[in-house]
Length: 146
Image (tube, rainbow, N blue to C red):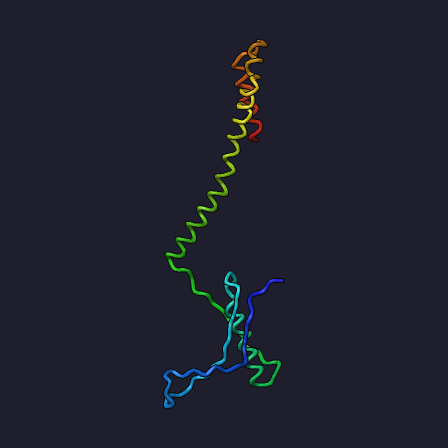
């Protein structure tokens, strides 16, 4: 199941005093931790809404109370847009160019295997011309590229 995050809400009240002098007021607040999925842009606002809906329902006693949240992320700056486009371009180039390295490797592998087992030499001894060997190799390579 996909989760946007969670809210840890402790019902204890922390009392903080700016200076340890009785003349200063004490600040009280509840401790809350919001954990959210940072890859989902709506994760933090959704979890913040859930926290405040829980607070509203506790304060009013109405379990049907709700809060509507609308999230409008800021548009990318020109620099962020340039960096994003550069990353996308590099990734696309990698995915397009790397498969093209397999085509020549496929052609060369056959010739290297023939050199290793000396089949071209045996064909020359049998009377097959070198031009016929290379022409057949060229035609075969072009047909396998289709």
